[in-house]
Length: 219
Image (cartoon, rainbow, N blue to C red; front, side):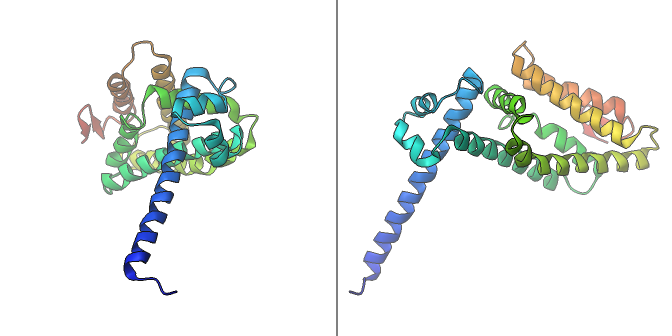
């Protein structure tokens, strides 16, 4: 039987609807996992907690992810993809100048889409497990290397431009560690705000690269 264009269109629309529904459910479960990690931590998060948080049944969780480990890997994958897409877009938008690129990378770490208490807490939960879980290390390792390499290249360029005396490797490590420390402080909830954390990161840039930055941005 030959299908009419109208019937084919209706079938395609239904198929797209099912696909969108599946992706929506998966995203609901991932968001609920982030919430649970932030609230309960890694070891105390269960599939039942995630199902309740998403307002879905335990069977739906099992259908989409089969196990807690697969759900957690998918959640980490989502967070890693989101983080990489955010800094990649910031870097592209910054243009060709090294100072503008470095400013953009530092600023995007405190973007309101990425830098939320629940996501920072979820990151910390995964960091705490990474040493004993090679899958987590493999998932983020290559991207971490790429990210660090970009910082290193920018620090080297700024050194050449400004005649600074620092060691680029050491400066890269110190800068990234400073930003990670600010994330930890934000996660601890001791009154530090995202805006104040970014301002502190800017102070670091001013001290490290005085010929390239002001508090308002790249010179």
